[in-house]
Length: 242
Image (cartoon, rainbow, N blue to C red; front, side, top):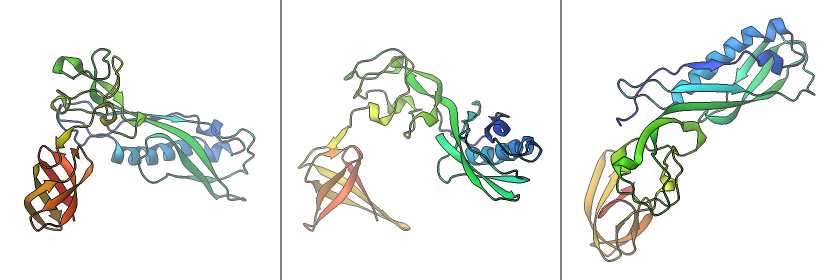
C-alpha cells in the first residue's frame, strides 16, 4: 500500500446534543449548537485523521455523542461554545460545553467517541504465535485506527517474513505489539553509527557492547574508546539523535 496522503474527512455528528443538555433552552442550545460543534469537531479530526493515498477513498469518521448526567440542572443559556481538548482527538474523549451568554455561566463535559475507519493490513486467517507472515497471510480491510494508540501496518513488505509474538484472529489488524522484536546485531559485532543533529550528520563505526534489539537503546564503544548509547534501527546500524 502507498503511504497515506492528505484528504478531506467526512464527519457526521448526531442531532442529539439538545437532548444531552437538560435544562438548556432549546432555541439557544439546540440545532445552532449542534452545527457549531460539528464544525469545530470536524476541523480538529481532519487535522489528525489518517490521510488517504492517491485514488483511495477518504477515511470514514464517525462521531458518537454521549449523554450528560441526567441529574444535572443547567441554567438557560443563549450561547454555548464547545471547547475541544488538545492532542489526538480519537477514541473515547470529551468535548467541553461552556455557557458564555446567560444569567449563569457554567461548563460541562460531554463524552464523545470518535472512530476513524481507513484501510490497513489484517490477518487473512487465524494464525498462532510464532507463525512467520507471508504475503498470502495478509489482506486489506477497513480498520478503526482510533481503536489503539498504535498505528496499524499498511505496507505488506514491512510484515512479510516477520514472526508473530501473539496469535491473530481472522480480520484482526496488525500492530507493532503483535510482532517479535528483531535483533539487528549481536554483542561484539561492528555496526555503522549515524549521528543526527541540527543541520548535520556524522557517520562512523563502533563495537556493540550488547545485542541490538529493534528500537532499543544499546551501548557502543567508538574508536576513541568512549562508550556511547544509540538506538538499533536496522541490520548492523544504529542512530543517535543529538
